[in-house]
Image (cartoon, rainbow, N blue to C red; front, side, top):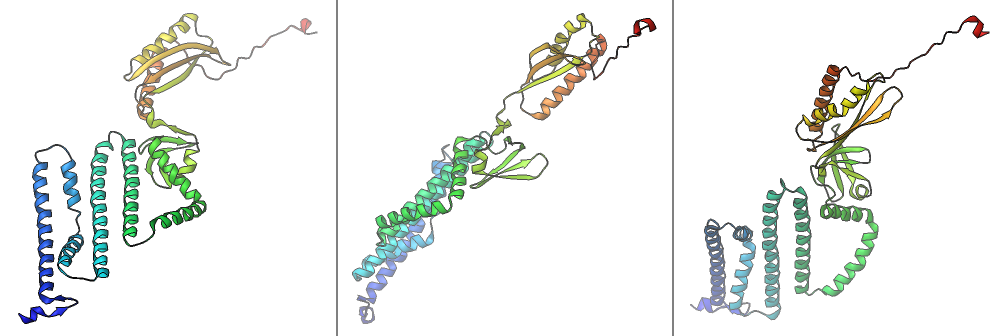
Length: 355
């Protein structure tokens, strides 16, 4: 027993043994509490439809063993008689560990919430899914910024002076990378304002394609010919964008011309024939058909109808069916389509008139 009364760094070996036992007991207890809580909450999740309990389980599973070890060592250190400087270091390390682990819990719960909601929204509303991703990134950035500042404050760093210095330095950095920051803010504008989302078919200037990815600096579009088009976000927002992904129905105007030899009765029939051809197709809404003009070699009729499906392939299938129907009806009525022709009139004069 005299061996246990020997002093080491101001504490007897017996005290050191007690402190080690306390630390080990606290570590085991914390680990058991963690596992029991996870099992208990998982049982609750089976009886509930909310995702909050699932979120808590996911966050608890992110608990690091090093955090539990630091807390256990802090508990064991309470038994010891340590110098103020050593005790202060232990407290500081423990507080920083709590801050970091708390940040991990919140971040893990946030990522679980983002992932679960994104899976639900990605098929229904891709724009909302993009917004959730952007908000999650901003929240996590703010979270870890706060954790870093609190940790530095506990280490004795003058956070106020640091923030002021970062503000001045940030201005200099912003001036140096203003193009990159412009693309970054343009990316946030795209995500929040939603002029287009992933999967939309857009035309930027004269370049058409389907949006594949919206990044921090660039947006990538798959062109109809197969290559990938890469646009700077800032340049993209300054361009005129036609978004066919937001098209609910397609307005289709087309013109047909018939020959000048067509009788007046047949001319009067043409609007009815065209209307019947359009209305015989599904997903169409007839608007109008009029004898519009006298052309150079044809009598022109302008027709407008709507396809109640934004798909280009559906529109082309309908237009083809209408053209075939018109060809059939015109052939049956004896109406001829016009094509470029010229009529030459020759006047014969006798010899006396010519002189």
